[in-house]
Length: 439
Image 1 (cartoon, helix red, strand yellow):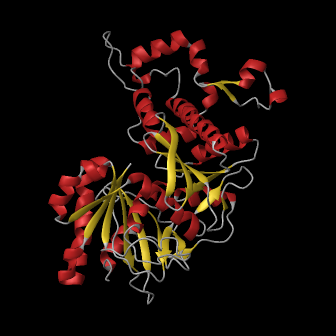
Image 2 (image 1 turned 60 degrees about the vertical axis):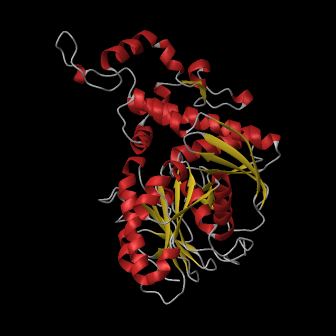
Image 3 (image 1 turned 90 degrees about the vertical axis):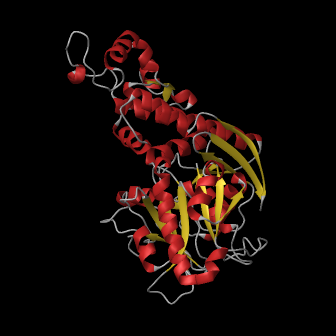
């Protein structure tokens, strides 16, 4: 089996090949979470490749955002990829090991053409290296994009499209990260914000809380043994939709950046606003949110006038000819963003706790593109689980949390005994693939 060429791999990475240090200082915590590292594979000896802090991931000319990779020293698969989430394998050009690197890229859904063009480039590289064997290439597709873009993918790439069950891929991808990749899974605590868990095999049962546009909660009892036990429609799509109406943010990343600068206390009614201090008898700090957006009610008339005059953050010229661009909004967009982020995250955290309590599950893994390594989101979800369970349950997070389905689809086409602990030994040997997934 051949690999993607050095040119294609370098075009998708631009990351420095080095291991993570064994200890993390608080000043590097955000860098660790937001830049999850490339992953290199056997998977015996697999590790995440930390990027060069001086050259963080950026949007390229083709619109892709490159995430950190995983190195696989003794593995010989070819390509995995997707339209919204692209995962593909490449050998290290300077290495004599038969393994290589799993590359992770993200495309916005309005950049599907650019994503297909990049996959087409990988396809051409594969054809050059493999000749007639390139006819055996097929595309793995999972999630909504497997159906929405099926015809377009088949037309542009001219290969077989193999669609896989989304939930099956999610669980398989998560199992892989938990069992096989060191320094991938971590817990959050104010005193130890990124405490990495050791890769281990004894992981069942657990609860997966997958947060995309909506939220699915899945009980996993064993290898390929799972059931969806609940969820909520109030997820990432809710946050994105409401903040699009209430603020001037145009992308999800803009909203998260605004939330980092905001003060939810300017919008939310806190316990301290009601009691003037903590309510220690029932374990509530003065900063605990008593009512999300609760202060808006007290300032209702002022808030309504602001909304009518300004239309959120848009600067329009009123009928009297005065431009309202210099008017100060009653509620800052940063404060609104932080308040809504907390509201959605707290709601998800409490529902996750209730589901884990009902089904007697101690370990709760959070995945999906809603998290995006955002520290405030991780802190809120972790606090919710710890608070409601009184410290009896743990919230776990992943550095590649948005790629569970993509990696799961990739893994479905790997040879027997693939993996350090033979985690996927019962899956058949099949053709090399490109994998597709859309959240």
